[in-house]
Structure formats: C-alpha cells, structure tokens
Image 1 (cartoon, rainbow over the protein chains, first blue to last red):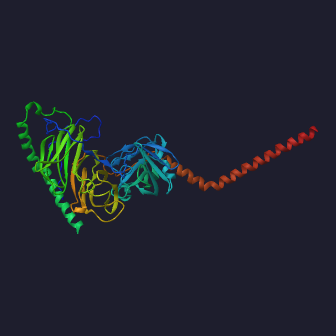
Image 2: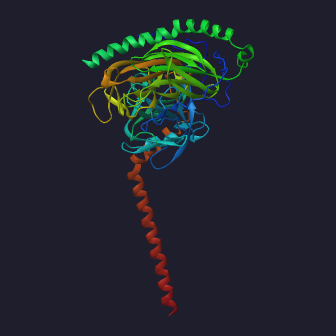
Image 3: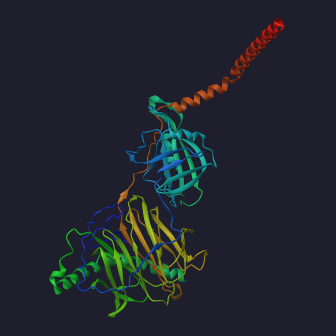
Length: 202
Length: 309
C-alpha cells in the first residue's frame, strides 16, 4: 500500500479556489541568473467527457414550482435545514449534482409553526416517473422519480440508505410525513423520494 | 500475461514513487541548492521576496527507459529520475519557469511553463500518442478544492503513447475517449478501485491493468498513464496531495415539519371523503329548493303578463 503524505516537500500546497488568496508558499528555487528562452510546454485540457458537477442552488419540482437551495450542515447529528419554509437545504457532506456516485440530498420543511405549509409539502403530490431538475452555477441535472417511501424518523439514517455515498448517483428528497404529534416535536415519519439521473449533468 | 506484469510493475512503481518523494530526493536537493547558491552572484540570489506568492511544481518523468536530470530555471532539482516517478513539490516563483530534462548531460527536452501564484502544477515529461514521436511536456494544474472527509478527488491524465482511451473503473467506463494530453477529474467515495485502460469504445485489448488504484479519503490522487503499450512499457505514475476538508457528517435526524398544518390538511381531506354522502344530499336538497323558487318566480311573471293583457 502506498504510504501517506506523498506531499513531503518544503512547501505547503495552497487551495487555489479562493480569489485573492495569498499563497504561503515560499519559493526555494531561486530565479534564473541568465534566462534562456524555449518554446512553451502544453497545457493539459479536459477530455470532452469531463463530468460536470455542481452544488444545487435551485430545485424545480414536476409542474414547475421552484425553490432556492441553501447549504445545510449536520450539527450534533441533526441536519440544519433552512428555517424558512420556502427554502430547501442541500446536505454538504453528500454528493454534488452530476457526481458518479452518492446521493445528492435535499431536505425541506413540509410545514413550520410560523409559515404554514412549506415548499416540500408539494412532495406529497409527486409521482414515480416525474422529473425533478437541479440548477446551479449555470448547470442543470435532471432526475426521474423512482420511489416514494415513508420511513420512521429514527430509522432514516439506518434503514433508508438516503445518505449513502457509495451507491450509484441519485437525488434524494426528504421531508416529514405521517402522524403529527406537537408534544413530541413534530411528525413521526420522513418522506423519502429517490430519483435517478436522466443523463449527465450539463 | 502483459496485464499481470504491468500490474506488478504498478505496485512496485507506486511504492517507489512515494518513498522517493518523502525522503532521499528532498535531502539531496537541499545540499545541492545550497551549493548552487554559494557559487552564484549574491545580488541575484536574494531569496524571492519574503511572502511573495509562489507555486508548487511537481515533475512526472514519463519517458520509459530514460534516467533524467531535471532542472528548473537552470537549477537542478532532481537527478537520476527514472520512468513513472513523480518528484516534488518544488516551491517556485510565479511566472515563466524553464523546465529542462537532460540525460548524460544532453538536453532531452526544455520547455517554459507558466506558473500562477498559489498554483499547484504537475509538469509531465511524456511521449506523444505515437511512441516514436519526440517527447513533450504537458502541465496540469491541480484543483485543491475541499472535499467531504470520506471522499476522494481523482485526476487521471493520458500521457501515454497510445490512441484515445476509455478508463474503466470497477468494470464501468468512468472516463471515455481521453486523448494523449487530456485529463479528467472526478470526486468519488474513498475506496480502492480496479482500473483498466482500453482503446476508446472497446473492451479489449486492455492496454493497462487491471490494477488497484487507491483513491484516498481527503486527498487528490493524480494518476498519469505513461509509456507505450506497443513497446510493453505502459505503466502509471501516482501522487497524492492532501486537500482541505469540507462538509459535515451523515445526519441522524431530519426534522422537517414543526407546524402540523400538512397533517391537518390530510385529516380534513380524510373526513370530507367519509362524509361525502351527506354533503351530496345537502347539495341536492339545496338545488331542489332553488329550482322550486325559480318556477314560482317564473309562474308569477307569467301570471302578471296574463293579467296585463
């Protein structure tokens, strides 16, 4: 097995994704004393089959209703879904749209105390075979609904496979359903809709 | 069988590559650099401005059968580098950097590479698609974006002397129609994948593999196909770079309903359905009453007309 820490040089790799990021790399190879000129090397290009991947920023349900998608983080085991009922959260530990493996997980309120019915109340009308679209960063990915199941809330993590990252790529939409018990903080079940990619993300 | 020997070669190569990077190369480079700096004119050698943004270069020696001495801007950074070895990182200033590869004192190839500040770049010395063609240098910037902790970033580059290829992972084509010089990147769950390279659109002959490729969690693994299948020198060079971590763990609880209104809707619908018989009767009774009233009014109007006449 290859040993870890292949990056054993004197410089620290810097993430290049942040604009204006100042690198901490201190060059150890001095500038040339008498520069020689030569042709330029090539720059590698992505093959045409390079996959598109993106963080979803908008979800469009069958029928055309759409909602903004914000990033949702798990804190102390609970997914922090956006408080506003008309917004949906994307679990930041899951796949991005267009990845080859893993679930892209979106969760949203079916209702809230202050706002009434949420955007994901519409999930109760969704049927198998219908298409859900994710948009983000100028890209789009379509998913066809394969299954609609309800699972007891305490079995969501262990029995539904909703959060799996090792299975084939899919879209998973989660909200609440079943009996509502205000004294116990909400609904008994989660509604889990699984949709498979229609094609590669574009 | 070619596949088996190449696979064995890969394991040996990968172990060789990584132990090289950790130890001997770096220890050898620093005394060499010191020797160079002492000999040269002091004014020119002022360490590139403290805090000036630099970049990391890695060099991949992709020429089978050669042992190369690599310099950056005339300064030796690695000697005796064998095929399929990855060396570095070397910290360099941003700008145009001269990469020179020599064997036995003779220049094999020399090219300028443009380096942006803060960049991480793999500079690959390799064959073109035709094994008899002159060597080329292709540089690949490394995307060091964060990944969730159980995911792995992979970048596979086709720098081998063979036509366009498909890269099959665990039996499925994951990258298709990749030509010499091209690369593909992907984020996958961390795991060891069985990789094969075949001519694009075909399932045979397998020009490389099947070999085990570890895609390490939290790292970018760069894979370079190098060599010539037609000359039985096809193999891979591999290097890894630790990435920043993003994302959070799997949720145990998703609580997405705090108002109960949706359940209330269900109840109203359910009870309406069971009382529907009663509603129909009430509706009909109302309609009947309305019809009677209309007839009564119409009757009075006719009577009035009759009276007027």
